[in-house]
Image (spheres, rainbow, N blue to C red):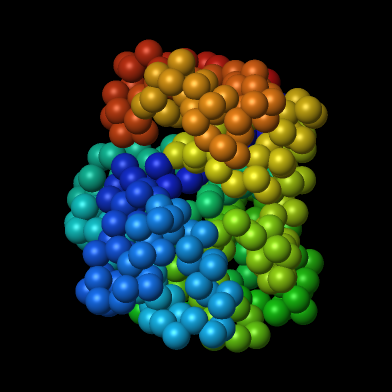
Length: 339
């Protein structure tokens, strides 16, 4: 049976109150400190990619407002966290009665569970994300379930533990990570939920050897990932799972990360099949890959496009809210039931 894998980007959480990159730029730009700082305001008006600007300022130790800007970006993620919680009342709280859970949240939770292999196979499923928000952690907590995450001191290892976005979580050292891989990873085989892998770190995560925030942003993401044991290990997991005869469901990823696209292309050469949930019509998506997206423009966009085996032209909420939706039925047959 072909492995089923999930990959999400900002467009996934956008369905539940999360910010897209353009929204994040606006929230950062409108901060009062930015408005009163001529240098940063000018930089932002010239560069709409908040990630590359974050990388530029963060790496410049001599920039006078460096720490302030870093805190402004972190505050933007805090505002997004508030927006996610206000858009999904009580999502951060445990729910004793399943009837109190909003139907769409229950549908999304069950959808994620489908990426765990059948228990009889005694294998591990994976849900990879490029997002740094806490929506999925909240979602699992809301369902009184543990979100399985590799070797990190978080809600993943504390039953009924209230996830606190104001608490920082320090990532494991290489020694602790190695012990987890040896002693605990095998125990995840056969679980009814996939392991949740945050490839670019997370809001509230800290480096194992410093107090720096670990949100992988900007154009040097691959180099940042290689410096931290957990991120490096997670990226290798992604690479190993993609390089197989697998079916990959992609939701909300804009194909703007070169290091991710490289792995996808390598996987497609080894039998990986792409399935995409996207409200954008297929002809517009093709044009985006071929011409509008500078990262995939040309041959890369063509290779990705020709590797698509399923295209579900609606947003996630529409897809999961109606089991009679033709796209839902096709997803059942073409993705989950395919061998």
